[in-house]
Length: 277
Ligand SMILES: C[S@@+](CC[C@H](N)C(=O)[O-])C[C@H]1O[C@@H](n2cnc3c(N)ncnc32)[C@H](O)[C@@H]1O
Image 1 (spheres, rainbow, N blue to C red):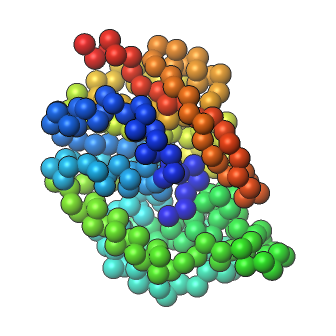
Image 2: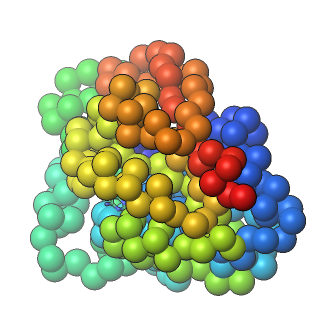
């Protein structure tokens, strides 16, 4: 699934290079719950869940109700999602109606889930705040620059079934739509937590809840008892906020708003070793 800031390409490198604490706790059998308080499009979650043992409890959360409804639909009503993917036609008009419907209150949660998937696939950079791929007028007739360029119904259907099977393999799976803080505060030493909050710089332009209180997250993590790992964009403010933790640099490829590729720097932050002893 397309999602702005999704970590599907980076997560293996992030875990392979900086996930020692979490991985060894899982291998030692100390972890009973895996949680992602900022699940978004699941680019990171899906790759991590594939390698986790099935006796774990999984908690996936996103403050954005639309995103949480999509995950609930994948978990509980994949047939509905598949039916809607197959019968819906993506165009500027249907995209606009879907955005309008998502802004209202009339939708049931499974249709909200479907329209979230639908609009993300048609949006620039996978963010509905950016409008449709190719703009509202679709002037560029190159198929790769049009709203339908990422709409591949049968690929989506197969992803939905794969994600559904993956979530079902675990002891239990909870999907929620709340603020991150209670989840992280309640997580004890038997919980592993990957956190991918909105980017410091670009977050407000990408997510419905992008105006994020970064200091508050740092305060909650400072007291956290769980095994955690956090990824961020490289910004002096983030380096300052986490001066008490271990900050690692990672070179990462990303897509500019015009679709071209560039190389940037990400931060991967973990607690200092002595905090665990
Ligand atoms: C960088 S994205 C996560 C991307 C995800 N890791 C992926 O690979 O698709 C950050 C997410 O945080 C969510 N968010 C923003 N504020 C939040 C809050 N206070 N609590 C929980 N989630 C929040 C946004 O809706 C967004 O989906």
